[in-house]
Length: 86
Image 1 (cartoon, rainbow, N blue to C red):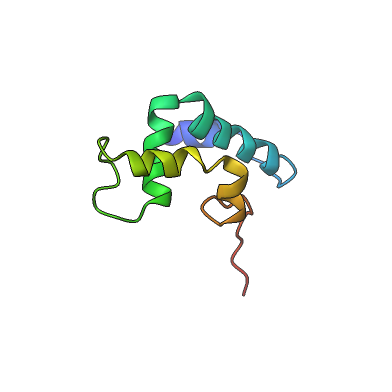
Image 2: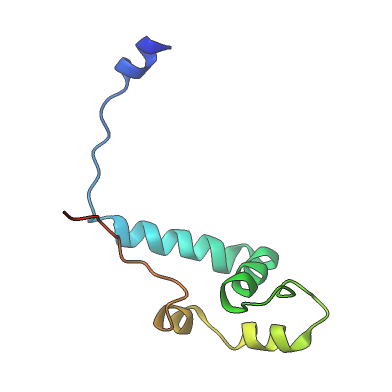
C-alpha cells in the first residue's frame, strides 16, 4: 500500500480549467439529470421543511421560473473558487 502512494505522480492543477470544470458540473447536476435536478433546485431555493413535497404545485411553479442564470445572479449557485488567505 505504501509503495502505491509513492508510485503516483504529483497532481498539478491550475485555475485555468476551473471555469470549464464548474460549467460541466453544473450542467450535469441541473440539466442532464432531470428528475433529480428538480429536487436539487427545490432544496436550494425553497427554505421550508416540506420543500420536497411533490403535491405542492406552487413550489413547482417557483422552480420552473428559475433558470440557472437567475439562480447564479441571486446567489444560489456560486462558481468562484474560494482560497483562504492569511
